[in-house]
Structures are given as C-alpha cells and as structure tokens.
Length: 362
Image 1: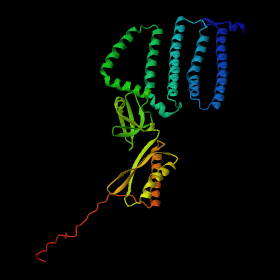
Image 2 (image 1 turned 90 degrees about the vertical axis):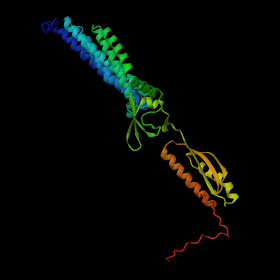
Image 3 (image 1 turned 180 degrees about the vertical axis):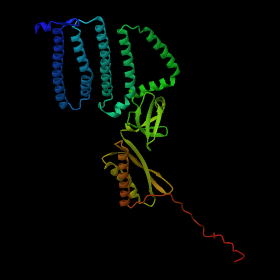
Image 4 (image 1 turned 30 degrees about the vertical axis):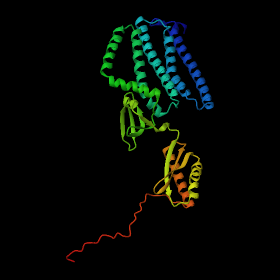
C-alpha cells in the first residue's frame, strides 16, 4: 500500500493527490457546518427582529456569491500545493482570476443593491422599488463589469493603456453627440436622489394625470386614468411644475352656500355654529373657519373651510358627502331653505298686453 501511495503521476505522488482531495473535502465539510451554524443563527435573529431589512441582503450575498468564492479559493489553494507544469499552473491561475473577478463583482453589486434599497427605506422584495432602481443598477453593472474587465486584462499581462485612451476619446465623442440623452441621464439621478416622485405616486404634469409605473435612465412612464401609457423624458419632468398627490398630508375643502332672505334672523345667527358642529363631529375632518360672508340680492351667503385629514381621494369624497348631508339636515331642522338665483318682474297696472293681429282671412 505504501509503495502504491509513493508512485508518481504527473510529477506528484498519489499520496499528494490523496492529501489534496482530503484537504478539499475536509475544508468543504467544515464550511458546510459553518454555513449551517450561521444560517441557524440568522434565522433565530430574524424571528426576534422580523422587521430587519438588511438580513435578506446578507443571506443572499453569503449564499450566492461569498460561499462559492470561498469554495473556489479552497480548491485553488489545495491544488496549488501540487507540483504543476508552468502551462497548467498559468492556466489555473487565469481561470481563478476570472472566477474571482466574477464573484467579487457579484458581491459588490449585491451590496450596492441592498444599500440602495435600504436607503429608499423599503423592503428588499418590493417590486416597485426594484423597478425604480433598475436604471441605476444597469449603470452600476456596466461600470463594475467594465472596471473588472480592465482589472482582469491588466493582471493577465495585457496592455490596457491603449484601450483606456480609446475609451476616453470615444466617451468625449459620444458625449458631444448625445447631449439630450445625457441630460435625461443626469435628470434620472436628480429624480432618484431628490425623489420628487416615486413609482406608484399619482401625479399631474401640465394637463396630464396618472400613476408612475416606471422610472428609467432616459424616460419615465405614467399610466393615466383611462389606462393609456404616457412616456415623458426625465428632463421634461424635472423642468415641469409637477403636482404629487401622494405627498398630500391632508385635503382642504372650501365651500359656500346661500339661504333665502326670508329666514328669521335668529336662525341665521345659528347657522355658522351648527355647521361647525357638523364638521367637528366627523373624526377625519378638522374645522378651520366659517362665517356669514355676504348679503346678496337674493340670499344670505355663508362660507366655510375645513380639512380632511386623510389624503386618500375616496376618503375625501366620503367625508365631504357626510358633511354635506349633515348640513342639509341642519338647515331642514331650522326650517331654512337654500337660495337659488331668482328675478322678480313687476308689471305696471297701466300697461296692457299687446293685441294680437287678426288674420284678415279668418
């Protein structure tokens, strides 16, 4: 048996191969136990802190990128202890550099994605948020993979100075030829960091109303009330006077009405206070002011202002309807009628109605 283990194959004894294989299997077994221990600890922590937004990012990066990279390092370190020919050794080194660069970039991209989502203060699996940062992730991927490729070529012995110089000149030419595109591109970053609106917000731009469904590097898409998709350039949106209804904390309602002049003064005096009681009785409404505002030709006019404390449009209509019905009930109980435009025509007694011309044939 000892003689068999001492036999040489490709410059290494069989015992050397056995030790390499045993080292790889032992290290991987230890790593699997460590992984199980860590994931059980993360699971216990998740149960204690279910609202933690960063845990899922850590688990995904650990399982999808870090562990495969560690496995590769284990295998490469073990195989490197063998006596290998320069060609085989150089081939393994190049393969390891490619895989190391690939998984390192994946780790960095996953970390950036998690940090950005945490910055937006949303859950990692929120589809709207992932859609919102898709443009940024495309840019991050492009930059990191480009830098990674340059790093890889440089470490493999290629001269990348010419490539970098060519990219610089090409970049200037592209920038001059695509100024409008670059303007939309920088407007995308204004939208992302300044956040005048987000995916899911209901906005108004000029005469267009709709819900944001996608924010891209160049354009933003809005679905209007009838289901059509409107496409705006990012520059147009950042330069426009934009109404974001999702940012409303409350809705203001101002209204007035008139009552007939025949109503007794004692009841006219009660109207502002009774309407105030109707508004204050609703839990979602906040009374602001109410007055007897004008004496008109055919009515006494009252004006009121209150706020609906919920920005939801349906709630706003429900509250308005409830208060309007309450005001009508108050006026009915008072015996006061709402006024409507009237005109009185007085006829003088001395005037007669024009005579009708008789048909001579009749």
